[in-house]
Length: 594
Image (cartoon, rainbow, N blue to C red; front, side, top):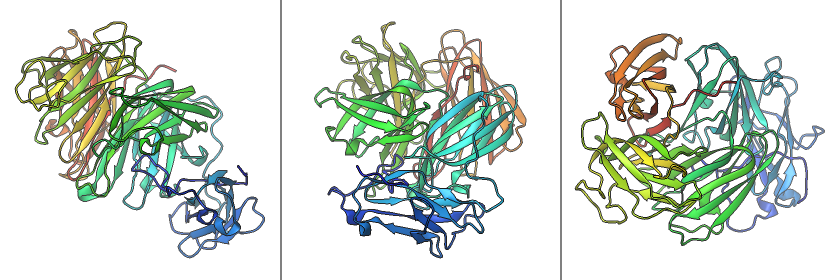
C-alpha cells in the first residue's frame, strides 16, 4: 500500500453502525476523493476561503467556497485506492489551524472540520496529566450522521460518588481514533447528572461519528447514551450504557444477517493505550452454518464496526452467537436494525456486549402481548461455559399477582451456542400458542429469572422487546446490587407526548422487600423527592414518573435506588409518542472504588 500523509473518515453508515458504503466493483482511481465542510467552532457558520492542503501546510490544494465546502479530486492525480493522506485547514488571520491526522482513502471520503477563532480555546487542548478517579467509554457517539435528520446521540453522565467531580470529555474521530474535540465540565455534584447533545455543539463537525472517553476527577461516574434518527413515523431511538472498564472478551448472544429484515452491526472500542486487534467468532444457532472469525485493528481509544451483511462467509437468514476477544480491554455495542427505506415502520434498538455471565441472571421486564402496545419479548440465552446445559426461564407477573411460570429449553445447549425463546410459540416449535402451560407463556408483563441449572456454568441473556411499531432491547443483569444508579429518568420531557421513562425494578431472592428512590432534578441538582416502594421478594414492579405526584412534568431527573433488605435489578424504559421512540437501558451498580 502506498503511503501519503492523510486524513480520514468513512462517508456513509449503515443505520447507526456506520458501515462504509462502497460499490461492489473494485474502486478506481477516478472514484478517489475527499470532500467536506468547514465551519466556525463558536457559531457553526460555514467558513469561506479556508486553505486546505494535502500534506504539510506549504501550499493550498483547494479552498472552501461560500458554503464552506471543499473537494479534493484524487482521481485526477491517478492515485491508488488505499493511499494514506493528511490535511491542514488554515484561515490564519481569523482562526486557529487544524490538522486532520492520517487516514486512508478508498473511494469517496467525507471529512468535515471545525475551526476555532483565534483567541478562543483549542479544539483539543492537552489532556490532564493527573490520574482520573474513573473513566467511562462510549463506543458510538454521532452528530447528524447521514444528514440533518440522521443519527444523533445525546449522552448523560451521573456522579455516583460522594464528592463533586470535574469531567474531561474527549471525542475521537471514529475511524482514526484521534481527538476531534476535548472539553471540561466542572462541579458535577453527587447523584446529579450532566447531559451533552452533540447536535447542539458547534465545536463538533457534523455528519461525523466518534468514540468518546469521559475522564472524571474527584468522583466515580456512569453514563448512558441515547441514539436518535428520523422524524415522525420514521423516528428511531436506541440506548446503550457506557462502561468503566473493558474486558478481553465480550459476548453477543444474538447477531443476525438479513434475518426477517433485521441486521445487527456492532461496534468495538479499544479501551487500551495501544493499538489492538480484536477477533469476532460467529457460531450459528442451529449449527448448520460455518463458523466464521473476522478481525479488526483498532487504535487506542478508537472504534471499528463489524457489519454482518458485508462479511464473507456469513449466511443470510441466520442467527449467530458472537464472542469478541482482544489482547487489550474492549467494549462492544450492538445496534439492531430493521429500517430499510422500504420498511413502513422502521425499528432499531441497541445493547451492550456482555462481559460477565452468571449461573442465574435477572430480567426486570419480559412480555407476551403486554400492555397497550402488545409487546413481546424474545429472550436469547447464550451458554458461556464449557459444559452442555439445559437452561430455564422463570416468569413472575409484574406487581406480584398471578401465577409463576417456568419454561425450559427444549434441548440441551452446547458450549458457545444459544437458546432463543419466543413466547408467541410453543417451546421448540413454530406453532403459535395461547393457553398457558409448561411450554407456553401466558399473556402479560413479567419480571423473569434465567438459570443455567448448573452452578458451574454461566450464561448471558439478551432481551428483545418488540411491538408492531417499535422495538427495544437490553441485556439481563448477572450481578444485582443493593444500590443502582439511573442517570436519566424523565416525566413528559418535551410535552405531553414527550419522553417518559418508567423504571422496572426487580427484587432478588427472599431478603429484598422493596427500595428507596432518591430523585435529583437535572436543572439544579436538587433532591426533590425520596420515595419508598414495597415489592414482594423475588418479584417486579413498574414505577411510572407520571404517577409520582411530587415530580413535575417536562422535567429530567437522575435517580439513585437503594434496595431494602437485599439486592435489586433495574432497567429504565424510555418512551415517547411517534415512530420507534422506545428504548431501554440497564441500571448501573456502584462503580468499583478507585
